[in-house]
Image 1 (cartoon, each protein chain N blue to C red):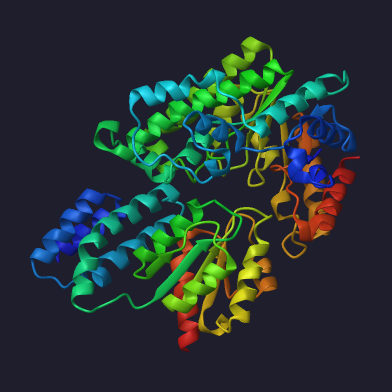
Image 2 (image 1 turned 180 degrees about the vertical axis):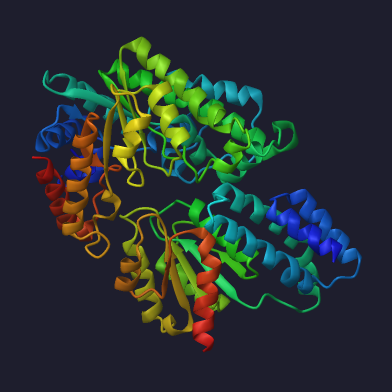
Length: 214
Length: 338
């Protein structure tokens, strides 16, 4: 459909004004909000992720695309709520206790939102107790933790331990990332997955969910 | 030599107190230089200080400065007042850094090295979403059309003034070389795709303020040590090496220094660049791998003949649970150069 194609193109090109206009046109033409998400937005963000993997796009292009996608979602979300529909998967994300760096976490949050997930961003300097409380109250399927500093990485383990202590660990998949974080570290602390770049986050979360469903 | 003051600082009974005590900090920096047998007395890479000093002029308490961001454009009178904050008191950390410089300057065999965040990297700490703002500017969005882009340019003015102030203050206290850290000047913040398409963003946000900084250092007889551990493209390395023309260029672990040597004038010493950020983990970076990488780097640098100081990709941070592992790997790295 022309409007969907325009929305797809606007998101891939990172043009928020065009994305919003295309969304408004599509909705006015009677296209269902969820259809816009599934037929235009998710494929567009998939394409952005592919271009990032191919090193044709870089972090700035990811963020512009995410911004365009968000401007579209602003029009769509109220309609979804009004119709009783909701995003299928909920993700809680935050930068761990003692760490105030939020750029990487924000990029991953944007990419996940663009991938069609509901994202609850707890911000930075998030204590293990706050992660536990968010899991208890918001019932996410995924918890994402970010740390930029080697000195704050141990808070990831503390958070996983806190989830275990609260009896919540088996309810969620835990994904960790950040500059000093490695796959080995993820395995050492009992995380379910490790992500070394924002572009890969959506795919990794989908894989985790697929494994869970299998 | 590693950039290792943080490791030595954490041998103090109260590291946080030592960080803010100029004499103790000076001793830590002296001890760091002597432990790794270098005349370069490199201080803590504490890149929070210029932001704290700048925000103090705006009435933001030091305890809140790290989390504080400007969220909307400022008026001209506010910008002018913040840029002219020369007489405002410095934070405890900056005062200690200056006192430590004076202490180091009393040793004729040591070079007192100052430390400051680069202007663009300071911008990245003043805004909640600097990458998107820069990407918008790089895609041609004018300040008149976007509050975010307008704030980006305003923050650059504030940041440059704050860094210039910090540098002047450190030179006044004896700094003979200045390490300027610009980790945000990298492909995560500045899109190579946009640069290839003709955007002048790298020039405007990174090179122009740093060239003015270099001119100020030259005028004061203070050498530039330029550090950028971000992901870089060749264009960036060439610009830093040839146009900023530092005495030492310190690059991150993602660069192959022996390949970068062709981009760098022979009178610019390359520093680095073992992946010390991974030293905490024996799984990710076993000691054998540290030795292998160091041996490879040393051999390649000897072969290419470019002046090189073996060192870390960034400052080597203390990690409580991994102190012994990190120290063992730093020692292994240095042993390869012996």
